[in-house]
Each structure stands twice: as structure tokens, then as C-alpha cells.
Length: 273
Image (cartoon, helix red, strand yellow):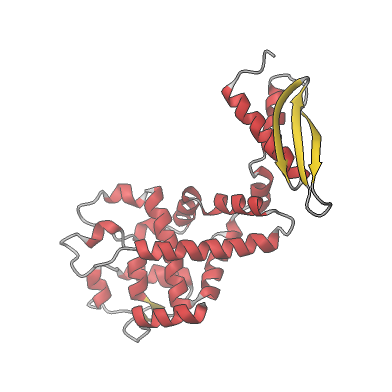
């Protein structure tokens, strides 16, 4: 896969001396006239840690869609939307691999939910803010610049586009290093896992705050061979059945039962029962 993308990169963004530049660049360089400032070039090279980068691809990564049809920037014909698509896939792959190795006991559903918490728009926008990415976005003159630079959607898209650019420019290894430095090292994974849709904890908190008896979980049924069982668990509060859930692990079945209970609580007032 990496060799395939290297071929695509060589075609779409040729790595020539014109495109891959050191820290010094002349004011009349085509990329400067296209909208990429010396400050942003310096920022990109320091952020990625590369002595030379394929600047056209990073120009695209920072280009908000408002620029493409702006008469003031006729030389820019592509926004970062395609790179955002690619970066999203690269990010999903690398975060999935990290979670898969870090939490070998987690089921597929838990891994998916944990990944979703890390790569959602709000989180990505936060990562983008942590590296001041918004300051370097290229925005059309007719657009609301201040609003876009602080927009959760624009920042998340730009962050994923940057990952896509690094992947095309330097490959999966450097994309992984970037994600490690700017996401993995800043995420408290233990907190995420502990809070992962923890409906059981939420149900306990609810019963305690409303002075109710603690919830009790009971296995109602076990179906299937020993290596492929499905457990059905119910949760009760006193004599009241609050919820029921089924899964291949008791732990998951209890969470599903608690989830159903919390959904019922949200819809009904059970405090007086």
C-alpha cells in the first residue's frame, strides 16, 4: 500500500527541488505568490520536523474551500477536502492499530467507541488548536476569516488534511510519528477507557444521588457452546426491572442492560416507584 501511494504521490506532487525546499525560500517563490507565507512555511517545517517538505501538498492541506473560487487567488484551484478524506483514513488506521495493541482485551465495539472519542470533530479541533493550525489556514477574502479560524469543522478538516499531506509526502511512518507526538502523547487513554459509555457507573451515580437501593445485575440466560456463549443480563433496582441486555461477554451484557436502564430513566420518572 505504501509503495502504491508513493507512486501516486510522485505523479500528483513530484518531489523536485522546486517542490521540496529547505528553510530558506525567496519572497518571489511561486508558493509565496500563491498565498503560503514565509511564516507558515517556517511553521510547517518546524511542526513536521523535516529539513525539506513538499510544499505544494501542504499548501493544499491548509487551503479552505472558500479560497478556491475567490478572484483574489486564481492560482489556487484545489481546497483541502480531498486531503481531508485521505487523512481521515490514515488517522483511523493508525489510531485503530494503537488501540488494538494497547488494549488486547477490548472487544471490537469498545475499540470502535474509544477510537470515535479520539478522532471526533471536537477532539481533532482541539488537537489543531494545540498546534495553532488555525493561524495558518488560507481563507478566501470574502469569507468570515475570524469565524473560520476558530471553526471546529474547519480546524478538524485542516488537521486531517495535514495528516494526509504528511502521509503523501513522507509515508506512513512519518504520519505515525506525527500522530504519536500530537495526539497519542496528549490523550489520557485510561480515562477514555474508564469513561467509555460506562452506563453502569452512571446508573450507580443516579441511584446514589436519588437515594435509591443500588442496582443489581443478574444473569438470566446463557445460550451457545462454551466458546461461543451469549449472556442475557438484567438489572434491577429493588423490585423494579430497569433494563436487560445480551452480549458474548457478561461485562458487555451488563453495560447494555445499564444502557437500557439509563434510557428508560431519561424517558420516565422512576424515583417515586
